[in-house]
Image (cartoon, rainbow, N blue to C red; front, side):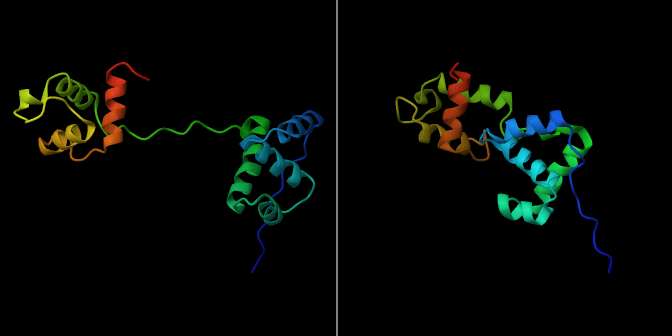
Length: 147
């Protein structure tokens, strides 16, 4: 069985090495990525780098390949798309409209909404399939102009 070709970073320019050394001093994700590149440039194998940095071998390979492909800018994280909102703007507005009225208007035996009461009402009336109290709170905060 043939052994797989070992992956190493390409030869670094003087400027690249300088920038990587600067990145390495910052304690963030880019610093770890810079360490991966510098360690590979010094001849360390992916397996050793992954052990020393406590990173998955595939992660180490990914950053080496990315650096080899596009250079320093390849160490930046791509913005990950967020989750698709579970509740549409229409449902969010409807929740706000419900809260703007008193529970008595809906034939309920209490004078004001609490988050658990509102959650129960929304699910009971099939406005939403299910919703947690924190999500109700977040929707109201946003719809009422909070941050």
